[in-house]
Image 1 (cartoon, helix red, strand yellow):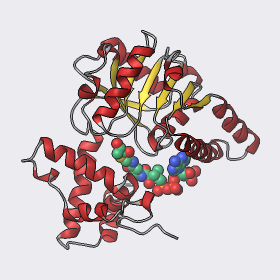
Image 2: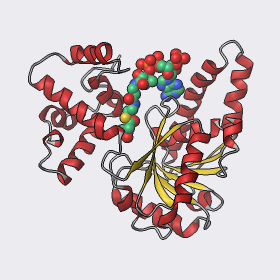
Image 3: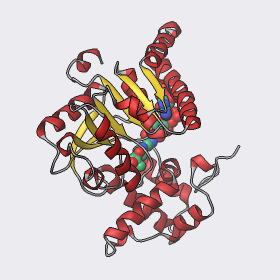
Length: 298
Ligand code: 3HC
């Protein structure tokens, strides 16, 4: 981490939105020696993020220093020292090199946020969105520095998943793109480059697969459990499609598919799926709500 850190000129990073993705990104950046400010307007969310980061860090540190608990504790401490939690957006972007937005997936909320920080952040500051389903270009319409804006799409769980999709819009400059790639590498991720298209690479392939698995279940081909076993043992996936849908969140999965269905009403794999809609309507959202395709209540 030390040598790759030297390759990126981005030292101070502000992450806006302290949900699962935002806190994961903050944690990984802090682990790699960046000064990180994690911002959220909701103080309860910030508090929860602090706890989640600490838990996750202990798991990571234990793995890194299996036989040396003192060193593991030191890793946790030095990472936490790099992290600041704040509910003051203006103050948090005044001296930052990079702002990563990881708030709710609503276009106008993201636009409002970027338009605010565009007026406050220093000129050199780069902006990135972690959106998984909205066009990066649309989010950026409100920004003046569109040459200094792109997508940085992370995967859940951020501390474990090695990939980072770096998304270029038509207006992202070569310099910004290079800086985003270098920064991604400096926090230990393997970066791929992608055009600003729905789902980028991973979600465009993954989400329709989750949908196809649900349709397969609806056709009575096999049980959810057997389809999961099949994809794990027959295709080497770490989770089967139903486990993964529950993990990502059935509301998120539905939201992504519905968004694409609206743009491409003739593409059948994006069509609404009855079982998915029913589960979401019943509040069965997957792991986070305690039940989805599987039951997670103790
Ligand atoms: N923080 C720190 N460590 C974690 C962690 C976290 N949040 N989650 C898991 N780990 C660690 C565990 O401690 C464990 O460490 P160990 O090897 O030292 O024991 C290791 O990861 C493996 O975890 P588990 O033993 O609990 O369980 P698994 O072996 O099943 O791994 C998994 C869990 C890494 C989540 C794996 O199942 C997996 O890779 N699943 C697929 C995840 C995936 O596809 N994510 C992408 C979703 S799409 C997305 O995010 C895009 C968005 O836009 C929707």
